[in-house]
Length: 104
Length: 238
Image 1 (cartoon, rainbow over the protein chains, first blue to last red):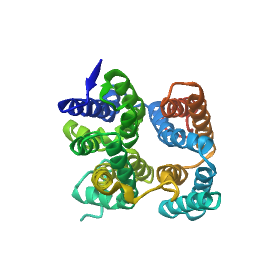
Image 2: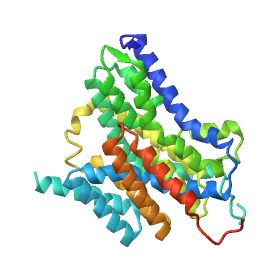
Image 3: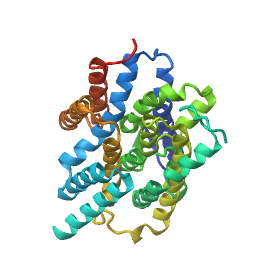
Image 4: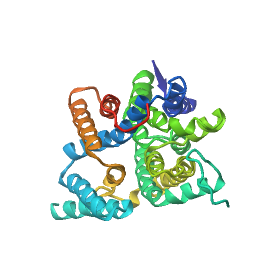
């Protein structure tokens, strides 16, 4: 099934996207309201919250260019030393820009 | 103001405003993504009203960029739904991780707050909870800041998109990656957590390489979560 994007069709497509996205935003809370929060579930949630971020970032490091890798490495080191996210993020972005400038 | 510490699930005007302010710096970067989206959407042939509507209602950058890839004179509905769902399925996990605190709100507020959940405000709120501070104001106020600047960026991109010719050469494509990494590193660290992260990273990479597109976040997150549920922290009351 496909929708023509001329006129009202584009709005229908955007509505479909909105509903799917909204379902993901509300679905996790909805499902959890049927799950008793045991200690094990809490441990699962705690471990998962960091893992979401790690799983997002890992492919950027592996598949990215040298600039992307050095940006992440710089952020990691600066964050461990200074412990200020904005400083670490800025340093990472700067590293990516520098590497890409120098390596053309 | 009383001196009693607020409960972690607290949500009031002051906390929402604080959350808005705390997400402002990262929101400025989000504007740049919005500019990129506005420009790309114009180039993909969307009308201005459709572009603004998509940013306002969908409010999920990666899935909006993916939709542009599928955009033509006709859009196939099922592939679009699968793509959007796969990219945004991480919101399901975010909802689950927020549940222990958000469950204390009445349902209308609970789901209302969730409408604005996004990577950055969720990550900041989880950090706040882990520090023992209320975090739902960060989700709601911070989400509004992100939404507002996403809209401003989208509009700027539509109107003057060609001004930023190459965001990549400025390193701006790494903003979200560096942000998320700094949130990981800023969180609780011990041997157990690091092993969980390593498993999450490895499973994410394997899924990225061998499984269908956009499944790696879910696979990595669930692998880490399951290890955490099997290998639980000791010294707690059963």
